[in-house]
Image (tube, rainbow, N blue to C red; front, side, top):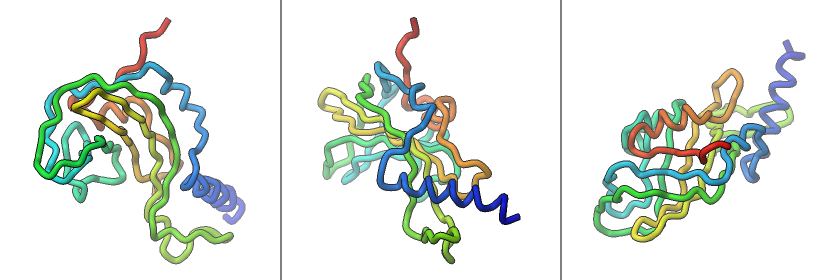
Length: 176
């Protein structure tokens, strides 16, 4: 059993190194230049907030996100004291980065995870955005907690689109 466990622990330890640096991913070329995000309909943004959590095509409260299911965080630049509505817009994707992030509660040792276990292991895709004022979009951050997945992996394009539903639409450039 230790022969099977050892490669798994090495993989997890290697992925933990991505917590502070971007991880290379062979699927990243799928997310190429020329992508856009379309804000399809007006979205309510609460007072004193710069982000919305989106899961299964619905806006959800931060504490209501099902972390082991695909979800996205849409962020804008400006913080306002009053609630506002984000108007439909076409947003340019200026860059894409994939990586792995761990959260407090994970203690790694040469023998594997410490007594607290692998509480969170998020595989994320970050879309850096640029939109003209008044929107000033910052990022679309799509992720899933893969701590207890058999083989951890990044979300695919279809999973990201399902998470966004009809609120936001991710559009790839037209092919040759």
